[in-house]
Amino acid sequence: MRLCDMTLRDFRNYKEISLEFDPGVNLIVGDNAQGKTNLLEAIAYLGSGKSFRAQRTGEMVRFGADFAEICGTVYSQERLQTLRWILFSGSKPRQIFRNGAKKKTAGELSGVLSSVLFCPEDLMILKGGGAGRRRLADLALCQLRPNYDAALTEYHRILEQKGRILKDHHENPGILEILPEYNARLCQVGALLISYRARFFEGLGKAAAAYHSQFSGGAEDFTLQYQTVSTVSDPYAPLDKLTEDLLSHLESHYRAELESGQCLTGPHKDDFSVSLSGIDLKAYGSQGQTRTAAISLKLAQRELMGREFSQKPILLLDDVLSELDPARQDFVLNQIQGGQVFITCCEPGRFTKLGKTVQIKKGQIQHG
Image: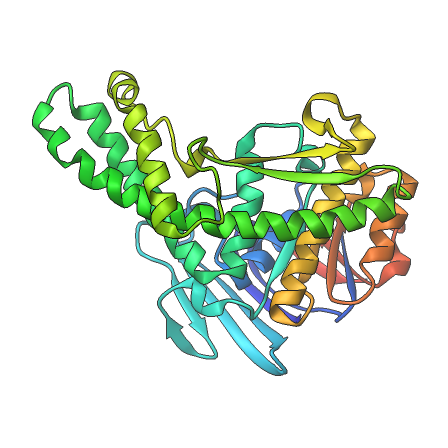
């Protein structure tokens, strides 16, 4: 799996650029705020339809433009393929094309151009709030399982509608008559999310434990624990049992949700924790242990995706090497052998021996 070339038009700070990439390591060099991360965002979006930065599609359209375009040629599944996205600044839905044919959903691109992003914020993801960890899992699972992407979109749609009911019921008490219907559907879709997540975290934890053991010289045992709604005693249970467990928890929070006007329980609150030799990393881990564990998680994610698609996903390292000490830099660089890698950094000459260099300045690109 590799990205051969890409063209951007009115994407972020790029008016129009065309690039060709090396099948190995591509080093993206430039000062801050020149467009290095924008380029990685475009690569990630090309294959997944997900942005790791933007909340709305229009944010990625260059200021003053009506739409943006991302086009790329990919060698994947033993053949050349083309991917194209058109993103609009207004409310018009985005358009997706694969090999010239228009597609309805991003799920129809699954496995064509998978990617794993690692940025400085991820180094401390195990110390922060649960939202970052949920996002890590969601971005990975949306690429691995198209049905998960659809279920996640549906879950958040229902959650938003339920939230409006809870907010409006004081002025319109009759609206509560439809709340049980929303709760039932929310639990059905939520059960599917839990089922997918439990299996993903099981595989991720095992793979990350192997990397961490190698990293730490076997000095620490890495354990990942998935945390979901307390009434779910077995996240691997059949979907009807998970749905029943979620409904039970919702019913126990019925009065509290009415009083607060908020959705207080469900898979949207899910999280995971990591412990090292039985010690909770979030509470007691050092900065070095936290960074090592985060690196292990990202490398594990890449391994899982490689197994699923029988080809290594693209690895995107957004200025992460400069945040690591030499030992951790070496470990990461030793693990990226094989597959296509994009590395951004601000220091020309620091990693140029790794592969092809692309220089960026004010949205303009020159090949080194």
